[in-house]
Length: 307
View 1: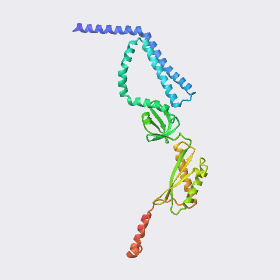
View 2: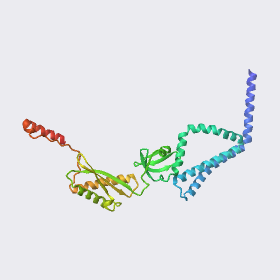
View 3: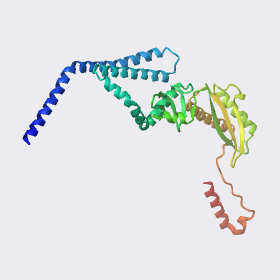
View 4: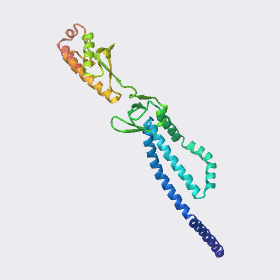
């Protein structure tokens, strides 16, 4: 038993000595490989910045410039890894790696199909002309300014200054509403006036108010005023006009300003914007049949209804 243990111990010592000899022999190559790897990392960063600086002189979109610079950085690192394998005399290992790359690639592709779909979608989004940095968009129930497009997600900044990261795949597969594709945006406001109002005067007053307060509206013809329906408590209309803005936030501000202007103009001209009410008509002689008590009860009921 002792002889077997001693024999195994000697074999282990010889194996460790052989490993140490191999390490000492290949130590210069290992040091050179570490130096090359470090140099490749540093070079990838500088070359990426240089490529981005050169691309900034072209007419490519910012998202496409960032994508190309990142791809160049990855290629530099891959070239450095090939050099390291050659320095360490691992050419055979490289052939083995390449031979197994097909099977491994299939397995990785199945496991990372979601990530690969986002990467492919990010490349697609980089080519889309109608989606770029600074655009105000609405997609996947989120709305905001596009601040970044990379190989994983589209980043938008919402009105409350929060950042939302939407996977590229969802952006490609779902509709995108881009408020920045045109120089103007339309403001749409719905309102109603009382049945006693002069409808032609209301239309004229509304158009004059909009023309005199919004720079983008030059003439009354630029304001679209449409009576829509006879409502339960009011005659309802729809107001439409354009403003010089591509931001949904500016549209909301213009709508808010319009509401204040219309309320002021209507108050000055005694035009009523009614709220929902209910009127009760009692038959003639209703109070006379039940006497004074019922008359009092009827007044209390009317008072409660008005409240």
